[in-house]
Image (cartoon, rainbow, N blue to C red; front, top):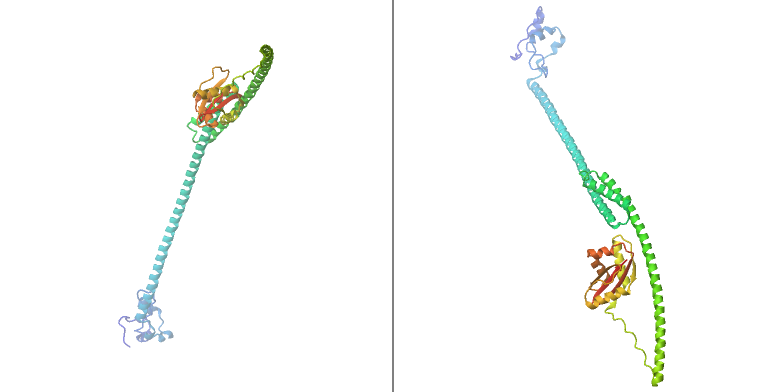
Length: 385
């Protein structure tokens, strides 16, 4: 048997000649190497531990020992497995790290979305509150303006109701002009709401005064009309008596003349009619337009009366192609003319004149109206009392 130089010679165990002879036959044997063994074990220890008389040693032959290519292949296989395992661990670690990074990114994105949503809600809430405060301020300004108009329209409401309304308006104006009016909408709304009660009280007091005044004027008018009727009746009776006396005198004279002359008496000439320029226009139509204007100002309507004297004055203005006030006036009077003919246009023209407007919104209960049309123009004369 040829000796393998790479294996060397296994030393003979001490104290046994037979063992030495047996070892002569196993000089070329080498213990099999484990796949994980990097270097051959010490032969001294192997020789000391092997029993040369063991029958199993007889069966160990060089053919049963692993060859060098097999050991190399095993080593390569373990290396491949080791490298694959390490690579798998590295790839798994990289993938786990990437997954953790993606999870953190997703969590950060979620947090950013939640923060943005919260910011949007806060901004929307602030905008809503600012809009609500603005709307409250606008409503407060309208309420204050309406209350001031009520003060102007209730001059006879009495000192106490008017003073209460003025105080409520002043308080609301103070809050509206304050630095907190843009944010404290509740305080502003509460202050403005306090105007309602004194305003209603002023309107009620003014209405009571107006009712009493209307009753007084109606009573005075009724008394005046009764006195005028009585005077007219007395005058008519006197005129009738005078006419009767005149007729009697004329008949007597005529009879005497006819008797003396033998002729027939001529009929008396009729009295001349009063001349009138233009065509009379409906006083009721003009009065309806006047009361519509008063209603738009929150005022009660006036009684409309057609006045023959006002018609005569309107005709005189039409004849002279000009306007002027009556020479004898016992009440407030407004006169005017418009073209084309329109009662609404006439009232609007009065409303655009401060002095005429003051009469139309005055505390009057009756309007005496006369109107005529002439050459495409409407002439009116109105007295209020």
